[in-house]
Image 1: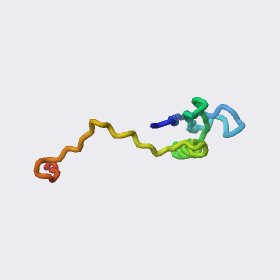
Image 2: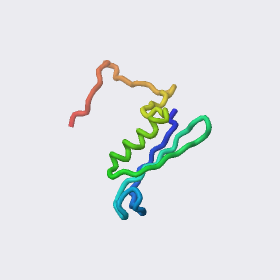
Image 3: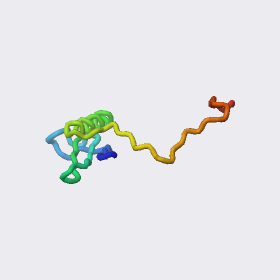
Length: 91
């Protein structure tokens, strides 16, 4: 089951401590479920890709599995034609 969320949004820096004031950045926010409850973390990056990478590294450092697959539904079936070979639409 998925136990985390990642939000990446455009962000304009308002302080001079970390970046230049007014610089356009991306802010990442993650929430994740632990036995103690829901936790979160935030940070900024210059590009969307860097923000995504930073958010994923943040979660990985805390032992959160990122590449999960939802469980298969008990009603899911793979349908094949009677001939046994898939047919493709001819355009």
